Image (cartoon, rainbow, N blue to C red; front, side, top):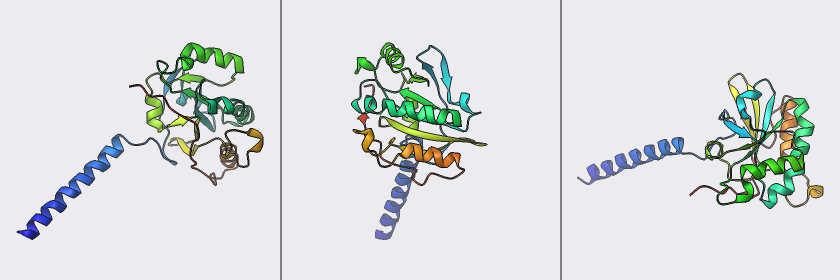
Length: 208
């Protein structure tokens, strides 16, 4: 009888773990390095819809979840612009996405996104993820949070996830430029030596 009880408990434990794995697969933490990046269709500040699939003729893209109000995002704005200027001609343009709930942070409203893009003269899309489904699909947690994708026959493969560099507060004190190094490696036909870092920034403001 005792053996039967232990076997039954083991059975239910295995079932529980299997359900947990299924739950994680369905409601996971987003993409991992090596995964195919989810496509999206979001409104740009110029009123046009932009899809990741629009970039399939490029070598890849630098997807940055960012926003207007976050002090970290503000400090990184010029560095994001520089990334686009450096790598868009080489096939890796920036795609910026604002995932924040504007009802919680009015500064991140679509109208204010238009103003910010104009002030900073963004030459890349600045998209609004109003439903926040894209941020959830990618697993973005902070602003800024970067995903570098490389286009393959199977689709855009995620090759780097994390921070832009190792110094959010002072651009002049940066020692390791994670995104720049990752993209440079991909252009050179190599895998990034660092493919995952911790994103440093403000937490995404989720809808209730």
